[in-house]
Image 1 (cartoon, rainbow over the protein chains, first blue to last red):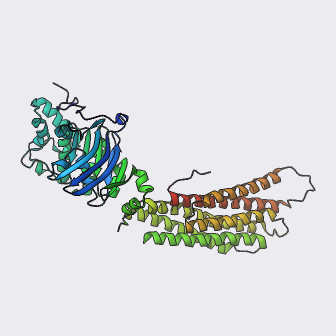
Image 2 (cartoon, each protein chain N blue to C red):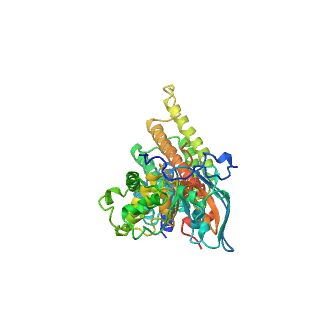
Image 3 (cartoon, one colour):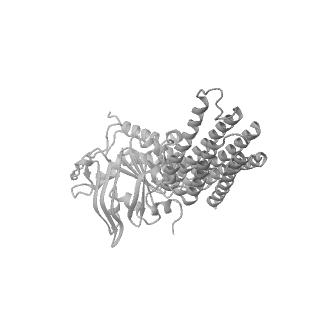
Length: 277
Length: 211
């Protein structure tokens, strides 16, 4: 049996994108260069460039409609699935441009997982099947291997101890916080290298939020995490780097301590201090 | 609202601590007695320092301030400590005067020279706080060097053996009181510098290493 620690989900490490930015190799996990995005004729992202270090947590903050969610949806090519939505620019995963025409978006989505604002377990599936669904879709049929990955993913999302005797119960029978960790387990089962999280705790109570934040801190040992949050204190607590966006532009980014203690741009200071408008 | 309240307390402390030190120096210069009054002011400054700390903790807990607000609140805790120390050293100065008895016949020139600079440093630190003058710290440290030099020079002078009939330093009451008061002025000078550091941090976000 193959160890579940090995990559079991098909997908090349180098997915064939251009690698003309050789200097980025091994320096950053994700590098965004001159990224523009539109919904029809409305531009949602304007020339965004940003580098994300491997095994770090990056928080993206900014007021509603500033382009935070659009940005992270561009990072696993989910943006273009919206009718009328387009993107232009370069996004490098390691040293390959995921927007290269030769790249299969499905491969990108395997390597870059996503967790959404509202917990969305598959409603008709059990806890077990929610985690195993992606594996089965990718053709993994070895029951022992799937069992192992399901367990490791649930352990990785700090849910195993709470659900190990309820694996056959419906996923939606769990509490909101457990459902969100189930969604994280589902993403982890695909063994992603990057995890995108779009306001993952906005629907959760403080205890569930705290568990997710602790989990993020653990997960970054193996993953690179990019999180969109409206909660300034959450960004300050969990992120190594923070990026502030406004009207589709990346206004300022830097180490979280610097952004919250000594921002360089007045706009950033006004936003994080709640003195906007 | 909380920030305004903390700012008002700090400015009250600035005025009271400045007044305490000036009154103590005047007592030394003119031989007046102000021990009880300065003790009350010193206690008042200590209470106000506690009030600043309590308010700062409350603001951090309730509002999670960031950026300039956070730097200001953090600095206010340090600044209020500095002003509280001004009050305490002012009391220590008048306490020396009472302990030593009359020192009207002593040479007070060394202390009064240091006092002139320290008085200016207190005013400068308070003004820097009001105007958020990030450059005041540098000037304050330059003045602090002068105070340190005066203190060390006087200390060196009294520990250097003198002929028995050398009366330049006066009797033990004179040089002991002068040395103690110079020491208190030297500490006040240090705290004025720390206030300058805090103002620099509020204005720029950059911490200065303690010199």
